[in-house]
Image (cartoon, rainbow, N blue to C red):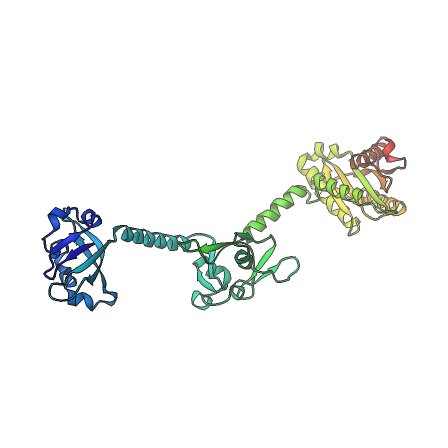
Length: 407
């Protein structure tokens, strides 16, 4: 604060004024105030000019003792009337404010540049769920032009449905505002784009706050998960299927068998087949592993075609196959097993220059009932029956009729 007389000479000042200007009161008192303000702002020191400024406050620069300038806010207020009246000049140093503003502007520019260059779609809304911003990725993902999208409801721009049930899914922004925390969508969500196409997405919403920490809206970050889900499906397939034949692998087969054993209802009956090729080593020895692989692939197709829709065929390893016959009484299971044996026997396999190979299979069959023991016990019973079929000449079906838990 600086007090000046009607001639503009300093008559008093406070310690903050000394700090701003870099001079003490001893040096400033009696000096014209204009000395401490650059010439281009002198007009603002005139009482008549200052009175025409709304609120009596203007922004200018103050000159320090070392000749540097600092941004300042200047307000002038009369302290009395008459020719001898004095005025109080209040100067506010805006250096820190200006630096903060410049930093904020820099941050905003960097933030916008970042939003427009990242690979995720970003949408912001106000507290009513009205869209206020889309970055270029969001434009492409939703199919909406920003000029059309801004001002629309988020549900209009981002309609979501369940991939499994096709029912509408509320957007995460609603829960985000209600609960005041970040929200992630569950898996299996589809975005219905403006052109009618569908895109699998992942979505997270977080409260958008101003510098005072007050909620002013929501920011949504959306990922196009088409490639992610494609890769996920491929990895899931590879984890549950045999790479050579495309059949279910042993791990997945055991998982399905475990489910059947655990869910046995009173009176339900199932069947388990273990199939082992006879003289498979001859094929590998004569034609190499390529011949053996080709035989396994062709037999896989044959076995699949012989099964009912509810049955599962798996390659358990090497030339061993497993077949799970769900809801299949013993008589029906025996018929299917015999049909498989006959089909393999009649299968004509040739390799290379038309070299024929005789193919047959040893098959072990065990019934799965409510008295069945563990999955391991069921497998042991089927393996034992298959071994019996092979030891008695092969190309036959052996039934395991004893109590499984007693093995």
